Amino acid sequence: MHPAGLFWVAAALRLLLAAHVAAAFEPISLGIAVGAASALTGYLSYTDLYCRFAECCRERPFNASALKLNLQEKLFGQHLATEVILKALTGFKNNKNPKKPLTLSLHGWAGTGKNFVSQIAAENLHPKGLRSNFVHLFVSTLHFPHEQHIKLYQDQLQRWIRGNVSACASSVFIFDEMDKLHPGVIDAIKPFLDYYEQIDGVSYRKAIFIFLSNAGGDLITKTALDFWRAGRRREGIQLKDLEPALSVGVFNNKHSGLWHSRLIDRNLIDHFIPFLPLEYSHLKMCVRAEMKARGSAIDEDVVTRVAEEMTFFPKDEKIYSDKGCKTVQSRLDFH
Image (cartoon, rainbow, N blue to C red; front, top):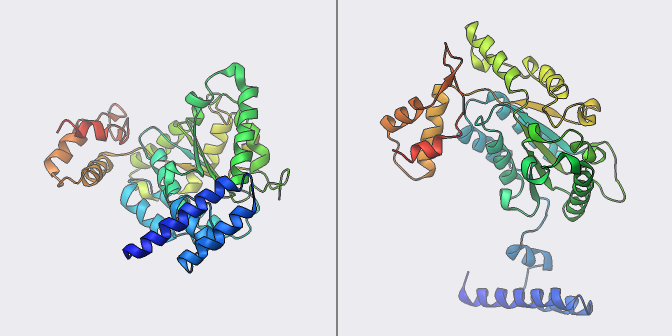
């Protein structure tokens, strides 16, 4: 932009920011400032100008192609997760009148990509991703640590979600370590996930809820191992091979935050998404991706050494990495 243009935009911004303070005492000041700012800029509305300098919750076209590319380039060995997440988010965001919020439950062992996918999803929904004011991350062991405070956590959770969805209808809520969440806490949000048009004047239908859990990892691994032992391709595993058993297994797992949860009982979770255990070839992909992210040249000798330092299971076959790609970054630091 020409220096003169920058001067006028800066002047307009100062007027708008001053108006925010003044409006608390004199509403007319806001109108005067907006008029002056429009005259200075010549074409920007108040909202357009303000949102150039501050994060705004605005409806914008969803870029499904960008999400697809992110998943293809950054997520390895997870054909089921890639397919379901792409279809679920694209379909939901293109629906102008959803009947309920989108609720996804991601399951699998540590290091298989659950947190990474939630980060990718957040970045494609709100430009600032996890740093956005409209993306909210809850970690069970940090935010809900004490079993004796379940009722308090339920009340706080309801107030937090109500307040944030009131401020931004397309808010995203991510719950990590669901397998460590005390049973009953998450049922507090059941009304917000249901098929209600509004609750106390607030619509939750455009919000997105994502649960991350290690629960069900044993069921997923067993299915993957059965395919491998039968000589069948991993990519041949379909969602129908896992999703029904996964939902039942999580519902009946006492070490799951969804144990006997009404969210499952009432079919309010739209998709149970399995993350398969990662093999040696996937670890090498993770190492290459980390090298690329660091701006380093890809050294295949280093890639091989890092991958071979990992430990694998089962004991005899040694097919799957027991930590997934979780320790790739720290191990790469040694090379």
